[in-house]
Length: 92
Image (tube, rainbow, N blue to C red; front, side, top):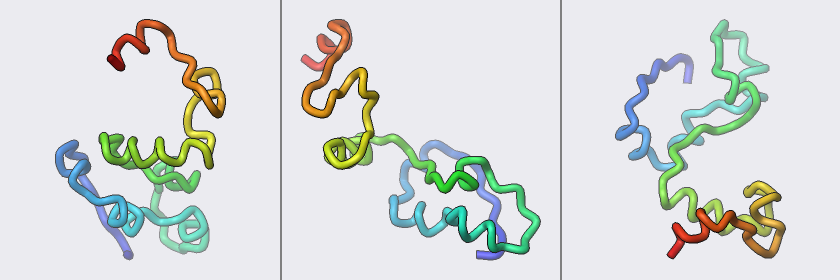
């Protein structure tokens, strides 16, 4: 991709599949090698992919919680959730 300009619409963003988001987001290595004078957002420069936190993406992410440190260690110690009572009651 040489250049693109995207507007932000929550409904449209939520409809874009993860595979397409990855295709549209350059890697940090790619932008370092680029001779284009583009001010990339900080998350792109940090090699992060920004995507909607919908129920499906969050569920898939949670399935990886034993392989990656996804949750705050104060909440998930690697085996148990340590939730404030108020939050635990919301899970009922």
